[in-house]
Length: 520
Image 1 (cartoon, rainbow, N blue to C red):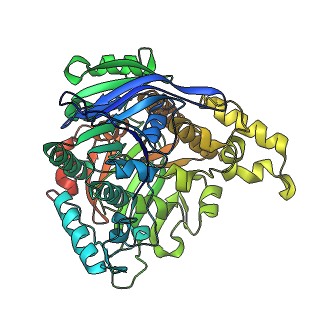
Image 2: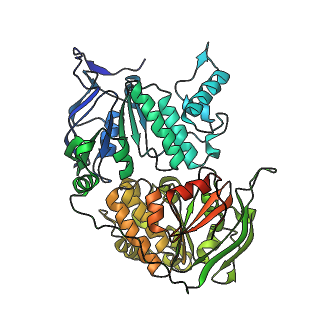
Image 3: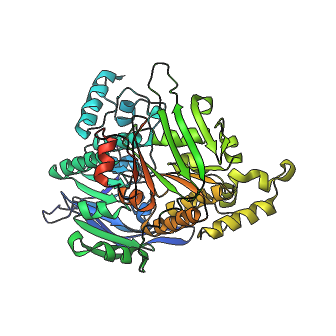
């Protein structure tokens, strides 16, 4: 049984389910939480808002037993607690779905869901019972995932659903969801919201962290805003419109983002793909991408849309050479034949890929900002094969300054940066290669509203400079705002190609679900 220090008090009916009082925490002398109060009621969704670096993650890690507060008190159901570990927090009914996934790739989905709480008898794990229980939970979520499949073989959207199932299986009273929809499409988001409604009906309290304003408007009962480690606002959701929420978060007004002018019709075709396919590893399985054709001009943003399993991410990886010779078809890059045989070859030909998981495939977290920012352009900073520290820091300084990165030093470990700052380092890494075609898979995933606006500005600047951008984003407003045309994929095939005037959320979803045909 987990041990934790408790100070018994008489629980009262008017006590909130969770109450945090005067929480403060510092790291290396820097105060990141300053006397923060927060409470959560039963059957409530309480949105915790704030920019990256505002203190949200630290507060959640204290609640989850990862960190201990320097000062302050945690009360659950009226009882004061001091958690010594995540196991303590879980034993007292706290489940946390972290933004950065924590699944074991070599274990099955069911084993991950019940990891640490295996269903066993006389020391033997009942795998059949675990698989059945996991399958029932996934069915209730509407997630078409085989519980026997290895987690490492799943795409990130499916992993996000497994992480949610893992938390729901704990039957916790306090459920924290940190950017749970960052890799989900709209039907999957609807399933998640149905799960939240079910949890609230059971009397659970939900702490919900998101940078998607439309989600705040839809599901929040109350909103707490943190800025610079302090609580700067608390109000019922009905009393905090989006404009006020943004103002509290960033401390300033943000410029309104407008759709850009249409691209030059006479611009050259920078990338043309004809009947491009990506074969699956297993023989007899359908291709990951199946005979897709599209042409993209210089100075154009092509959006890719589709549901889980559409093949959008696989198309970008295929173009970037990640699948090697499994990619077939004809590709022309600026009029010349291009074979995506490797990422090295893709970089040399002027392609860049911002992947959808910066911590696993975008950055090396044990390295510095400078090392990460120059990782894709090592030939420029390593003449004759020898690393030049002066060139590394000069190149990293140029690209990070262009992106207005806020970091104490280029020597700072990239793992210590906020999510928005980390994403800027990823972008700096690729801008340093001087690409012509930029492939972007969820470039604003898990970044705050202020950082999003800055990323939008950079994407527009690259478009206006004549770069070709191919964009995947699960946020429909973002997709519609940034894209000049949208190619909808379904089961690896092109389902619709929509111009800006034709593209609506309804048309995109109908095409993604197989209810329309390819149009020009």
